[in-house]
Length: 348
Ligand code: ADP
Ligand code: MG
View 1 (cartoon, rainbow, N blue to C red):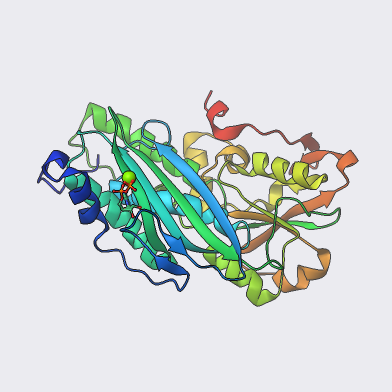
View 2: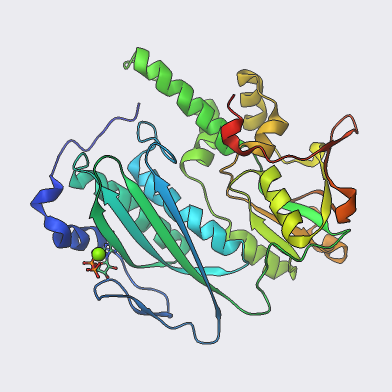
């Protein structure tokens, strides 16, 4: 579906490992004060002074986490960075550096890796992080990409999954279900393309949800917003695995229960219309779709006036005593137990 505009094909073997690393990383600039030594030595050297250091890593595997038939490599590079930054922001921290490790088969020419690194470079620029290292190796078949992100947070500001108290408000950033519905559209177009490669799909009515799937943004802005509003959440988690499973994690770590209100779940109009078209229940998608790199947090009732009406934050429920259980309160005002489905089970 996505045409390869770059027709040139330079075999990786022409460059050798060091030539390749040099070529891919030559544009990276160091902007962070905490980076003492970046790419080029045996290891990077960082100086975080009196800050707490956050470290997080994710591994993306071709055929498991991404499909290159509709995921342009540039977007994959960008997304691999976002997935990690989102975890740093979920600690209420600031991301400062990443390392990028790749395993590639000879199926990929240099031009493909240039695309991947263009996405990584764009992400690094926009989110103001330094790329300070990585590793490059070969793979027998597909592409693997692993990003490790580092960040900092002061001791007073760090927010964990534990800390939610009964009566706290359950709050989520942005809107939910878009990434999953974007994937549904892309999967459908891939099938259409297989039958008729000449068919040029009109995807203009799905721009937002496709972007949610292909070019997600980590919510750096929410960390800043909370700081500007003077709100420190009592607990926080990133909801890349789906709202329901992440709420359950949060409740488990905090030893509490919750009531989540179906009618409060924020949905974009494109998600609602795509759900109608695909005949899928929008609440199920919001709860279990996953890959929405939003932040779920709990905040004390006292802080409600500070977040009230903010378009970036939606109150979707309350924290309860553990003994009350974990429930979804439906539009029909019935309570059903929240279960973690994960998006894989969700397909059958
Ligand atoms: P080593 O032999 O110690 O593994 P390398 O030759 O693999 O060192 O790496 C040389 C430098 O390039 C190091 O600073 C390393 O972190 C960096 N580097 C290697 N691969 C990548 C990559 N894919 N992306 C970014 N930096 C990389
Ligand atoms: Mg190496």
